[in-house]
Amino acid sequence: MCSGQRVWTLVEVRGGPGEWRGAEEAWNREEWDFTDEGLRGAGWTAGVLTEDPLSRIYAVEVRVGGAAPRAEREAEWAVARLADVSAIEMYPRMPVRWDRDRELLPRWRVLTTDHRPPEADEEPSTWLARRQRQWRRRAVRLTEWTGRYDTGETVLGSAEEALALARTGWPHRDAPRTDVAVRPLDGRDGRPTVARRTADLDRRLTQILGLVVLTGCGAAVAKGTQGPVFWLWVVSAATSFCIAWWLGGRLEQVGGETIGRLLVALLGVYVVGVFLGWSLDEASGLSRAQALLLPVFVAVAVGMSLLVRSWTSSTHIAWVGPAVVAVLVPVLAVTGRLLHWMYGDELGLSTSEMDVSGIWQAASALKLLTPMSALLLVPSAWAIARHWHLVRHGGRFSAVVFAVVALLLALNAGSLGLESPQRAADAVKAVARQGGGTPPSYFGVEPEWICLTPTVPETELNKQGGILKPRRPYVTFGTTQDAVVVWDADHDRKLLVPVKQVRTTPADTRAARASCRAELRD
Image (cartoon, rainbow, N blue to C red; front, side):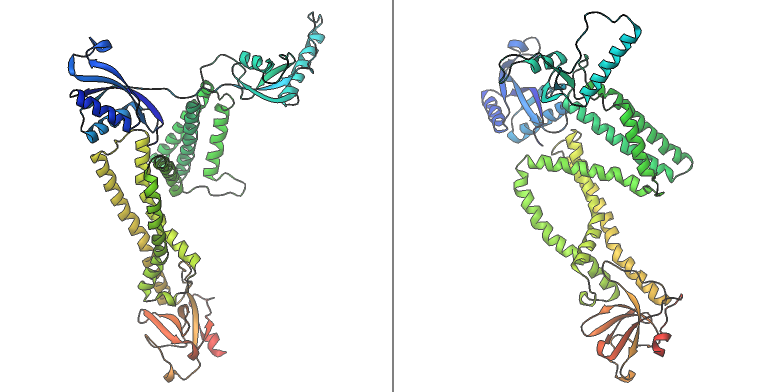
């Protein structure tokens, strides 16, 4: 995992000087900073820990990746893992995470003040004069908010610090300025508030967005249900929105006054409207399946991004990247033909008897890989669990659980993908037996009804696979260089007829059953 958190951990090393040197060398290899705190029970640990001349206490800066919550637990696992690898008896005793979240300083724009009316020495005596002065001040303030008098400079800090920085002589001024002021750029006007943090704001905004999406998904699923299930999804959607509303009200603590409950409400209404299909063209919105799969897709995207981020910060990418590319290129090439091979096998057709372009082969590969992409749930779930320190790196039990889940998903996804050619072939056979209907296409293979009129005596026809009946329409899969490929429903197999011995014409499909009588009269 990438080094995102720093956890100072008291580590006890037992076994004497040799083990102590070995632990220090192991920490140096991991690039962990450490300080020697003395023997156990001596120094500041006297009266805290029992004395042991063969045990030494160190303060080790353990660097771990992932989220800040539970980072202490990850530091314990890291020390225990290093102890197992190094065969040294070391024990984490007290992990403390450093808070590295940066403060969000208010931003201010510098503006000139020459346009402001001079302050009167005395308060206006009449009500009308006081009102006129108030309106002039409001008009000036509104004009300043438009940026008309901005100098283009920006300063960061409290209101007092910002004004002092704007008026200072730095960097190339002869003397401090007095004809400038500052105006807030992020909605904060210098009121005393809780310290704002960057990661805290990002985390809350992400939580709000995720809860709003869950609200829309719950509403979309509830739309297609009835009874108790309907109310269950309605309550779930309402709960998600209420939590998002509450988080929106707490954004003021992290510097987000301009993104509060009003914007959360507007975002929630917009997302729910899109998911339910509230539009001028009366769109149907998301289906139940789409609404249920959308959070899964988001989780997969988040998990894979976390996985890639952790790999790119380690040495795995040096050999995993080229290995993955080397494997994917031939796999994609074979996958692009696999479904067509299976489709042709169900109908007794060879690939040369089906005219399929490379674009449709790529589309069939995408069709097969789509259900197989369910396997991405496994590494995504693993990456999310590792990011939040829910599973231990290298834990046998968690590895077995994820392996079993991956196997079940692979079997299920593979069966879904490989059943597609058989269903398509069975549909074509059914249409041919019924003698009517539109034959379904399959990734570039376009079956259609045609009529075959012999141009030579029937006794000279060189038929392969059955007997040609000229007055009967056939489903064809195309024409090779030498023969017309049709499906013989009587014998449930393909029939090849030489191109030079027949004339092909489209069958009449306007009625319930296809017909060749009009073509034969011609």
